[in-house]
View (tube, rainbow, N blue to C red):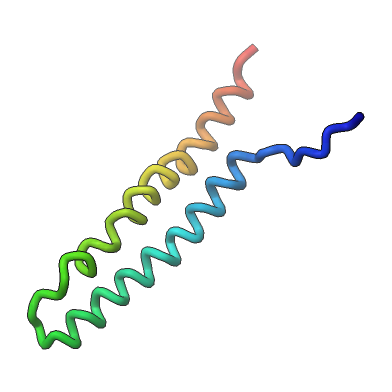
Length: 80
């Protein structure tokens, strides 16, 4: 009986995660500027101020992975 599982492609999953997190990050930064504009220069709530940090942290990890992919692939192709 053939397996009906879909093979997991890590590279595609990481790229997709990175793209969606970049959209989330951009929206949180925009929300941060809007909140600062509405408070008249006063400091907005800490949850608004720090909301861009979690997506940025995950984007750092996925970005480093995506950056290293060509080098890893080149190294693997040169191995005997």
